[in-house]
Length: 392
Image (cartoon, rainbow, N blue to C red):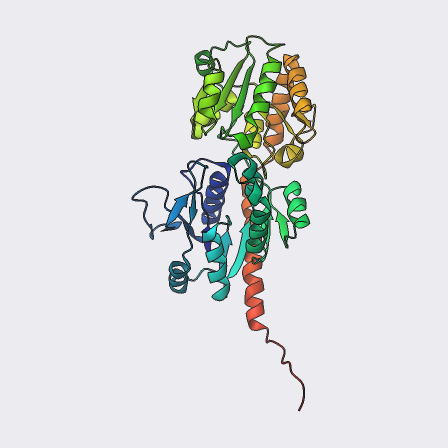
């Protein structure tokens, strides 16, 4: 198939959505499909690349207010119409719902091209953290409008499916996420890196990986770590990532290890060199970092929803607690730190659990959704419309 994927974020940008879409594109290309990625320009001089697979069609964009590092694409119906008349896709997949995504939906439908979509980010719930909480209902209404123009909306977890269906979204399908167990794994553990963190072989290292921002509920993760220190006073807290809350946190806790943004093998080494992963976010649609931590052999403390609900059994691969119950989260983390043998056992079982989460099965499921959408549109074009009207 010829597939156009429309997104506001894509590698080398570092976030869960970009990583997931990069994986999906690579998987579809590997299966023989012809891909075009439509996205905003990420930096000055970022131009269209029309040779190779995938090709990239870059369009104008603007920074997302108060969300450093990401852009939203501006409406570009004319550009898309000209491109897709010349290179007509079999299906257009809209991965993000901004003005660019809305343009893509409208143009594709007007040209008779199948449209699918996916829901990756709970932007409607981010408002309270960035000063536009009063827009929450309007944002949800807009997202529902965009997604319901597609044949289906793909989500990564049952939680999100149930939430969107309650909000009136149609055709919601679940496709989970895989994890690269060759990249992420205990074999990446580094004694040298732990020494740089001030940790010996016996030191409990607690890790957080992700955007260091208010919407990730970082203060609860900090409270959890401080409670863990009551049992392990020599423990270390390593935060991998960047974001608007980092500078303030560094001032408050200069004793923490701020490792900055990490990629590839360096990221995998940071994961594997820790012992426990704390993830207090309550705004996830999935949480790729959770499966990466499991694959790395870490015991995980998280809320019982999204990826943790799917892949963590409390007392087996880690501990999950009632959603958004911060006291339970802190208490669970503290209790876990009291028994290093349990931490080690959970880490081993976490790795075993992750070994079954292959990306290849995800690629096949995604391909089937796109194929079904293409075939359904082709069938509709061949089916004659019924003649209506009265006699007279």
